[in-house]
Image (cartoon, rainbow, N blue to C red; front, side):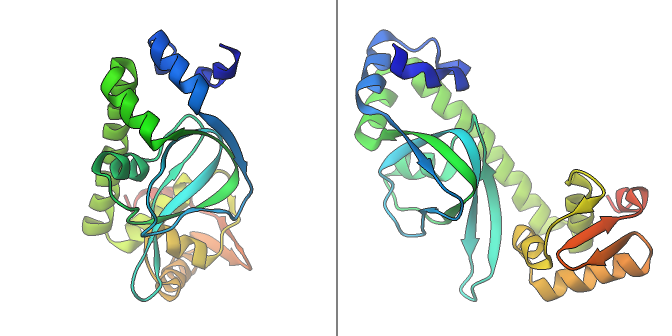
Length: 216
């Protein structure tokens, strides 16, 4: 089935039953979405299961004061845990998502998703295994937010970035850590005063990775 060549991005689905493949071939479609597009917003109904072929989006929650906290990102070969949650619970989205890199997604309409969950053991196992892995990632995030101090989480974030120069604003870092820009800026300034990094306009130069590692 040429129309299902996208299954190669999800090897666990290559053994789908013929009836499940036929259903996907008939009812799924692929969309391409540019940077900055809102995929869904808090309170919106969930109408489809989404499988990411390319690109990246971030899923975030806004506080009543408008502060954003990053929940997770969805990249190529992944699915969205909140979408799965909403489909299984037949509930609305509790958070929002925005495209950070141009995405290409496979869209499985909600009725087809529910039919496959009943009829296809292969599809059902794929959905639940991905769901379990993503829930584990969210628990790790909860652990970090609840039990680790901001300076430790900030040091970890800086170490996880590729390269010595990090092209991120203080606001972007604050959003990812679920903190206020002013708080993050003060902590970055403390790191700079210790000689661990150098702050520029819209970028950060990491000078002493070993000192940041000792924060862990």
